[in-house]
Length: 552
Image (cartoon, rainbow, N blue to C red; front, top):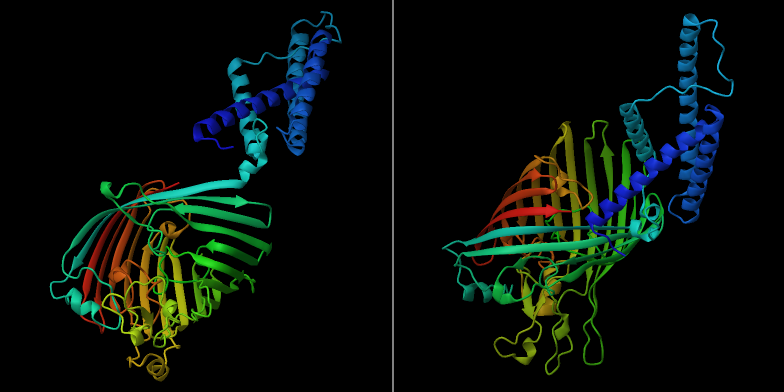
C-alpha cells in the first residue's frame, strides 16, 4: 500500500490530534483525588474510558505498549504537579478568606475549590502537552491508523536532471576516415561539426530494510539499455517514449557493524575517482567491505569483490571465455578532531579474458572474445582477420590484457568549516601490458601506453557529492578544477568517464566546474571539459554542460 504526501499529512495530523486529546484526557482523569464528590464520579468515568481507549489502541496495534505506558506515566506526573499547584493556590486562597472572615464556617471537607483556569492558559497547556508528546513519541506508520508496519521500512528517493550540452570539435581534427582507420577502432561518427543537445536524466529508487542486518534496493533510470555508463536521454519528440532500465537491484547484509556484504547490481563499492570509473557505472556481482576501527583517529577499509562483465556460452564452436573482474582494495583513513580527514587506498583490479583471441582460419572459435561494449582509445586488432572479412565485418578485440594497480588519495581540510577544501589524486598503471606477448598473440606491435593520473581540487560544501540521504541546503556552493591524463591502454576504455573527451582513453586535458543551490535539494551545475588526444590522430573535444537538478 502506498500513500501520497497529502494523505500521509492528513493521517499524521489526525494522529497528532488523537494523541493530544488522549494526553489531555489522561491529565484530567488523574485529578480524581482533588475535586468534589460529584465531580469525582464523572472523572472516574473519564479515567476508565481513557484507560480502556488506550488499551484498545494497544490491542489494535495503533499505539505501541511502551509508548502507552509512557503516556500514562507522563499523565500521572503532570496530574501530580497540577494537584500540588492547586493545593498551594487553595491554601493561599483560604488564608486570605480567613483573614477577611475568621468567624465563617469552613466549607464541607468533601468539597475543594479548584481555581479557575483561563481559556488561554488551557490552550497553552494543550500546546505544551502536544510538544512534549510529539518530541517523545517516534511516529511510525504502524502507529497511524493501523497501517502495515512494512511501509515504514521502504524509503523512496529519486532525482531529475535537465541538461544543455554543447560538444565542440576543433577545426584541426583528423577526418572520420583517419580516426577510424587505426588499430584503436574508435568508431567515431563526427570529428568536425559542433553538436547541441538537450538531455534528461531521471532516476527513481527504493531502499528497503528487511530487518536490522539486511537491506536491499531497487532503482530505475533513463538511458540507452546497451550503455552501462550513461543514463542520459537525448530529448526529441520523434524518438517516442523514453526508456527506463533497472540499474540497481541488490541485497546488502551487515552481520557486524564493521562488515558489509552486498550482491546483485549496486553502486561502486571502492574508494575511487572518475579516472577509471564513470560515476554512473553499476557493479554486478558480489563485494565485501571490512572497516575495523584502529583508534579514535584511524580506521582501515578493505573491499574485495568478484564481478561478471560478460557471460559467454562456451561450446565446441565457441572457445571464448567469460569475462570477469576480480578486485581488492585496502586503505586507511584519518579523522581529525576538527572534521578534517585524509584517506588513501591501494587497489588491484584483475580483468580476466577481456583481451581478444584470434580465430584460426575457417573458424569463429574466438569471435566472441571481442568486448561487448566500448567507448574509444584502447588498442585493438581484428580477431577474425584469418578469414579475410569483408569491409565492415571485422571484429575487433582488445590487444592488451588489463591488470591494474591504482593508488587513490584524498585530503579534506575543514579549517573553514562548513567549507571543505578537498584535494584528490589518483594514479593507475596497467601492469598487464606485455608488448612481446601481444605481438605473439595478435601479430601486431603496439607501443606501451599504460599510465593514467588525475589531480583535482574542490572548494565549497560537499553536499552535492552525497547520495540521496544528503540534503543540499539553499546557497550551498562548490567550485572544482581537475587535470587528467589517460594513455591508450591505462584502463579499459569501456568504463571510464563518458563526459571527458566524450568517453574513452588516449586523452588529456582539464575540467572546471561549479555548483550552486538555489533552494533545498535544487541546484544548478556547470562544467567545462577541454581534452585532446595523446598519440592517436588529432581529436580535440570541448564539452560544456549546464544542468538543473532536483532530488527528493
